[in-house]
Length: 210
Image (cartoon, rainbow, N blue to C red; front, side, top):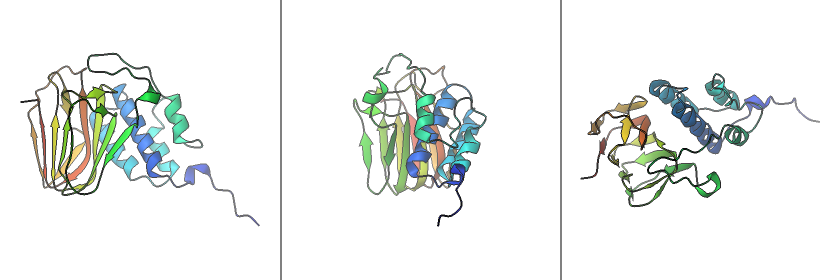
């Protein structure tokens, strides 16, 4: 005896599926389909999604990005756009670029500098952890990099951008912490850093190389 069929849209989603949708939202933001504030709101909702229906509501009005009734992996494949070759962009094909999402969780400090490969989406979590991401000489796989603060409490986060890089804070919520942004407004195009999510306590600093 079998139970009633389950609507695929009511199936529970995994962290991998949430991460795929976050990557799709980042692509939509890069194409100008979402402004920074709306991108931040949808990213927070995607991180908290329980079912495919939850994820689907975030993508319904974005052309080609619907995921209900099929895997998020399929949707990601269908919406992959052409690579843009600009200064600092590696131009490596998708299969060679490594993981689309870098998750930094747990305790202790973590530092990335030099010619490290930067995915388009980075998640910063953990309690009391210090994070330093130096993009000044990094190998970029996208001209837009989204850094999402997820379950991140205390600690410091430092971002070093190359000259010509820009930062957007519209989708970021800081509760009980501080932000020191020393990046002047600019036209962008080399590296556009989008900070999203919620950081509770601690500090965030963004600057150019000294």
